[in-house]
Image 1 (cartoon, each protein chain N blue to C red):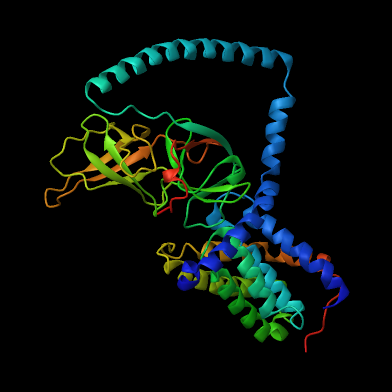
Image 2: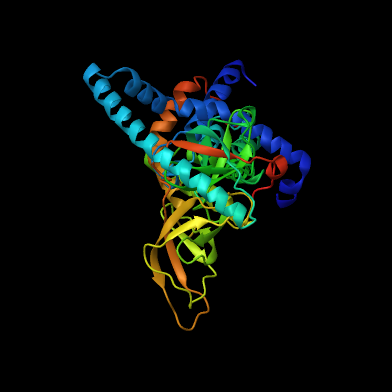
Amino acid sequence: MKRSLAISVPVSVLLVLVLTVFPLGEIIFQPSWGAMLVVFWCLYFAASLSLGSAFLLGILLDGFSGTLLGSHALSFCIVAYLTTLMNNRLVMFTWLQRALFVFVLIGISQIVLNWTLTLRGEAMSGFSYLYSAASSAVVWPLWSVVMKFMYPGREIND
Amino acid sequence: MIFADKNVGLRSAHAALSTLAAPFYWVSSLPDRVNQWGDDNLVSRDRLMDQNQALRARVLMLEGALLELQSFKDENDRLRSLLNASERVSQQAIAAQMIGVVPDPVRQVLVVDKGEDDGVYSGMAVLDRFGVAGQVILSTPSTAHVLLLTDPSHALPVRFSRSGVRSVAQGIGDISTIELLFVPSTSSVEIGDEIVTSGLGEVFPEGYPVGEVETIVRDPNQPFMSIKIRPFARLNRSRFFIVLVPESDTTLQREAP
């Protein structure tokens, strides 16, 4: 891992953890901060931050939100895989297209997360779990600006 | 994942992660604390004097009511001893402040600032100023998670204080309603009836107010009525809660539902 990442990663993970428990109105509309960080990692730092770090972040968030251990981890791994698969294409997109793509990616992570919640019989009804994907897409442009500020050096994807 | 949830070792890892979350909840409650600090410290002398006067009047009133209650309690104890019933145990209480909400949209779990170090363990009943609020499901050294009684996985044994009909109050995921199960269509229920805990589950002591009947649907084809009640506890507004400590240690460390 590069020296710059050794500072940026803990700081951004701390930021995500604080934002996750920070009360910002209805929980159902809260952006999925963890998934957004995973998408950012896999977009710009896919060589060093990918599935493994997404898994660890997911386990951490599982402990925080009291979900079954592994549900966030699974959904973040799937998001990390899909983003890494397409990141060469994604960095070419305009910011609007990228925000739309973030909606799709985080929507997928929410579907997986909601599916793991049904294992314990506590699924959300209807498509209400997609609200947080929508709010994530709305926040994404600002989020990526803040994150690029936090992660100064950028890797070139192979 | 289900197996991992049942695994004892991984369970303790999960609990350790929850402990790790405590400082983050504390940080996220900072704006609220600053606001509260401002309320406490940045007030004019006039307002403080007004408040003081109002509080003093209230203390007098409550002391009067307490005297009356004491005589009722003595009378009640005498009558109970006549009936050969055991005396009611008085409960110890711990005041706790809410510091966060667990970020899970399908569950209604609060985080309070008292934990194992203060004597709060899982299985203890939690009240607010108006009625029963829920129970502790997880405690870390400095915080505890409180499952609200409106959570779909929470059920509470209750009875009607007027008719004495017993029932089970189950949450439906809506913060302002709970559902009553297994009330026979033939029993007498009216809108506005008060529901109190029946003490049968041994988590909640008997006789604490839970809520009042809001809607009743009687379907002659169904054996049970469908009754919705409005909880007295202000679950989305209360910041201060009371955790009841049972007298004996037998109910401690009980597994939450």
